[in-house]
Amino acid sequence: MKIATFNINNINRRLPNLLRWLHAAKPDVVCLQELKSTDDDFPIGAIGKAGYGAVWRGQKTWNGVAILARKAEPVLIRTELPGDRDDREARYIEAAVNGIIVTSIYLPNGNPQPGPKFDYKLEWFKRLRLHAAKFLKQDIPVVLAGDYNVAPAELDIYPTRSWDKDALIQPKSRAAFRSLMAQGWLDAIRSVHPSKPMFTFWDYKRNRWPRDAGLRLDHLLLSPALAPCLIKAGVDRNVRSEEGASDHAPAWIVLR
Image (cartoon, rainbow, N blue to C red; front, top):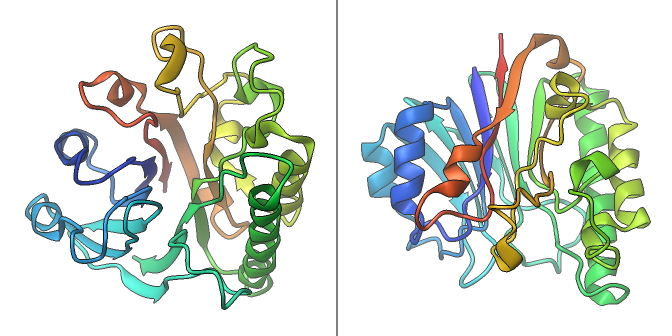
């Protein structure tokens, strides 16, 4: 089974890019973030014609998450992260596909920091850890996939000081990611590629794509029940070079 996560950065604007990639890569499950689409505007017709069932939670202008399944219909479990009834941002969706629970996560960016947006990021991380712990307690096969808006280590960002004040690489952001991992999750990309940067995001500004000035923000974390099934993992970098591309590239894993 091939599972991918892809911050599409406006699904309707990037729909031709998404459909080309689906046709070429043929992932079995795709977790999308930053739909920037309402529920009614989600392009289910085109995605259905491409051979994918889908569940999604949209939000006007910002956010939005979805899970696609090839030649299958994902079984929707939840459309929000538990723990805060007042949180209305569309950042989490969870579904079952072929006996595996898959999430699509769009963790808050947290900028500017310090401030309320950074506090929201850390609180969201805390809620995610509490929810993730329930999966492990039940020994369920789970993939926590998505855009975590964290570059966990120095290897996950190009050599620079220009991001030093950014929420993506703050010590508290990285500590929150490590705390989640410490529950027993496997960082699939880093496990397969322990010494390569494996960037998934290149900002549109300052010529960062041609310079390969990237960050690894998109992660697929495997529960202990799934970790032994990991065969391959990678990033489809070429997708970032296409005309009209998202500023992210799809990251993917293959499970036996």
